[in-house]
Amino acid sequence: MSSDRSALKWPDDFDPPVGVAEEIQPGLRRILADNPSPMTYRGTNTYLLGETELAVIDPGPDAPGHLDAILAAVGAGQSISHIVITHSHRDHSTLARPLAEATGAPVLAFGNATAGRSAMMSELANSGLGGGGEGLDAGFEPDITLADGARIEGAGWALDVIHTPGHLGNHISLGLGDLCFSGDHVMGWASSIVSPPDGDVGDFMTSCERLKERDWRIFYPGHGAPVTNPAARIDWLMDHRRKREAAILGALSFSPSTPQVLAARIYTETPRRMLGMATRNVFAHLIDLTRKNMVKPDGDLSEKAVFRRI
Image (cartoon, rainbow, N blue to C red; front, side, top):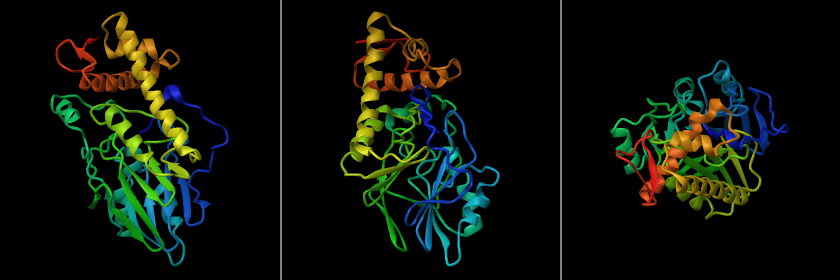
């Protein structure tokens, strides 16, 4: 899953047809899955890379018709050779196994659903903290595990694996020259939700810094339109997180508070039905601020705890 609802823009100029393999540049096609929602925007973008040996990047949800749409896009003289998953949220990864069974292609990813989780988040998960409903594909297991810095190669293409945890511990971005498949880490229509124990604000910011090390021309995200100003968008996302942190610290300057109360104070334009996600975002920041010794909870670190500034 993907978004911080408060940042939704819903531009009218991105509304591709569902289930149609559209060429978006030579050797690269996009198929939009039929799973629109406030968390997925128009739906999941599935990418087909290559001319003969095709890499399917994020096959998407196991939704009616989407497997057929992918298979129908495989033309004469083509075959699917790789199925690459940017991260194991259900809207990206649940079709991976049916597609692998239909084609014989292996599923490649950084690891299973908990791979890449930070030490603090692992402790929280072990203490009983569950996910916030972001749609973790808990049973996901790749056939081939990808390390940070690995290269995936097919006929006429090669993808560089960049581990970009933050939205999810096993999230990777994929570099193809000056093009990047950015998954849910960088999107143009909304900021990525970061929800513990799967999401980690500190990791998110570090991953943004890593992506800034390369001079990218364009990002193709997991949802929404291509990002044509990658550096500026990354700067905006980092600034957005810093402003959220400042707002939390500012609110705690007046009185100790819980994540839920803080979310209601800070996300004033967010619909009530999305305040649960907003609360998870606030809690993610509070965990990071606790790690940086800027706030502390009264008692155990939990989503129900009262936090105060140090």
